[in-house]
Length: 243
Image 1: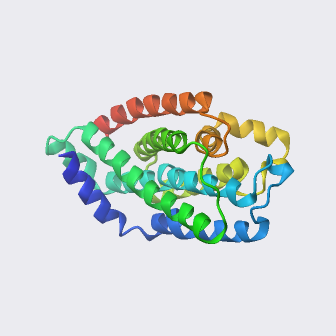
Image 2: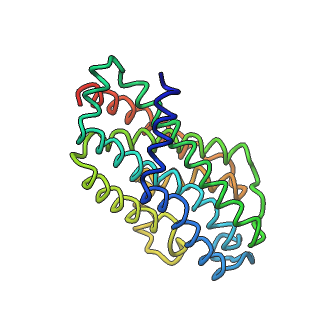
């Protein structure tokens, strides 16, 4: 059942140009602009790493955030508007296969986008390989679980697809550019750098970036993401069962 839903969701994703644009084209364009501006010479103000090494893992993680804040919520809110959720219940489909399908589709889309960002870095800007590939993959996986679950929860809470798009864009841009996607953290006030750690975006960036840069497996960030994944999944499944 879940496999059939996943295949249907993948086909439907191709009909959502905004999600595809935000997941692939927009981050790639910004990454190229930032890489061209900062280069990859070690910079003391970036912790001794180059601009490309700093931004590639950040923009790879951004693909997860786009799906969690924008892609999944908009898709599920549209389902609710059209009465698709009621038809699922009438057909005897429980909330778990639908939630699982959204997590799988998010993981696939995020993996494609992250591979695209990494290819840009290696192909044109002398990106250095991650210090711990396993650590990066672990952070990426846990981040995907957390943001997919958040996306499902948002999709059950927001009343319409238009509302989901608006809230999703606000959350993504509002958090991403202060979590490393815009100006380097040293240019931002300390209060913003501290505040973002208390949002889902902060742990996501730390979980992916720290093992890439040789700072080790960030246990605190991964634990925070696991907590978000568990809580959001439980709440989302309860909401799906009632929607």
